[in-house]
Each structure stands twice: as C-alpha cells, then as structure tokens.
Length: 153
Image (tube, rainbow, N blue to C red):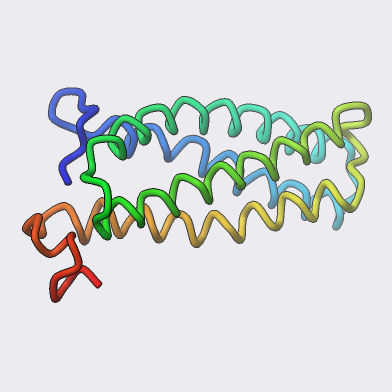
C-alpha cells in the first residue's frame, strides 16, 4: 500500500494533489464572489484557476496512476483506488468543460459553467475521502485485510 512514486521518501501524488485541489475549489469561490459582486475580474481569475487546476490534476494523476497500478487487482484497496481515480477523471472533465464554456467570455461565465464547477467541487469531496482511505487507513493494514478480510469489506 506504500506509494511507489516517492521523492526523498515522500509520496509524490500526495505532494502534488494539494495544488489542483486548492485551485479548483478556490475557483468556485471566485465564481460565487463574481455572482455576488458582478466584477468580471473575479470570474477571469476563476477561469485561470480552473485552467491551472486541471493541468495540475493531470500531473498529479500520473503519479496516482503509478501508485494504483502497484496495488494488487481484486483487493478492496484496488477498488477504492479505481473509484478515486475514476471520480477524479470526472472532476477534471467537469472543470474542463466549465473552462471551455467560459473561454470566449471568461469575465461573464454562463450559469452552466458555474454549475459544472459546483458539481466538480462536490464530487471532489467524495474522491478526496476515497483518496484518504487509501493513504491514511489502508497504508498500514496487512495485505490480507485488503483482500476482503475482516477490515477489508
């Protein structure tokens, strides 16, 4: 369960994921500020945050994929990792489409662009929880429990 991709003993995926998570979540709050204040520069900042967050997510996901491929298939950890990664692909797609919709008028996003970002933030709460299951709860368990034993249901 220990991360395969490491630098100086620390898991690369867990180091990198804070950037896209922070950027994407904060972009939504800038959208809310734009809705409240109507200042176009707030929406423009949200658009750039989405762009940077999706790019950062791609980078972080490459290291997450390396770690996931090292997990034995058919285990609970493998399934949790698959849901975590698959859910984050959907998050990236939601934010990516939101960015594409706003691209022509980043200072005045459509409601659908903001709704997609909101859905992305909500889904990120679930996928983040699944990632913490892998990193915090499954890392120290013996391999047998990940195969469906008492703690591996």
